[in-house]
Length: 43
Figure 1 (tube, one colour):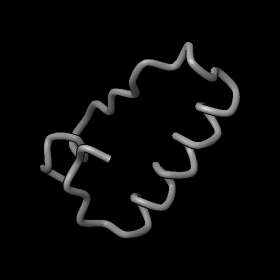
Figure 2: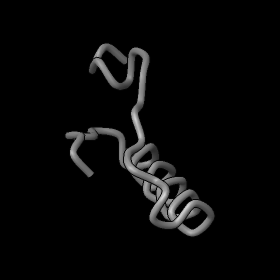
Figure 3: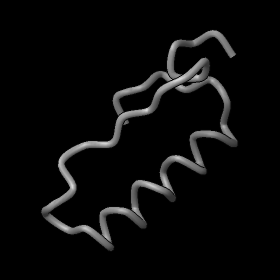
């Protein structure tokens, strides 16, 4: 993952989400963009 994630629980969730989306969309999945305070590092 390109993010420097401090929260281990969030990293586990995002890794699983990415895996599930990749399984569903396959090669059509180009990237996943996260918005909000966690993405900005404000959380």
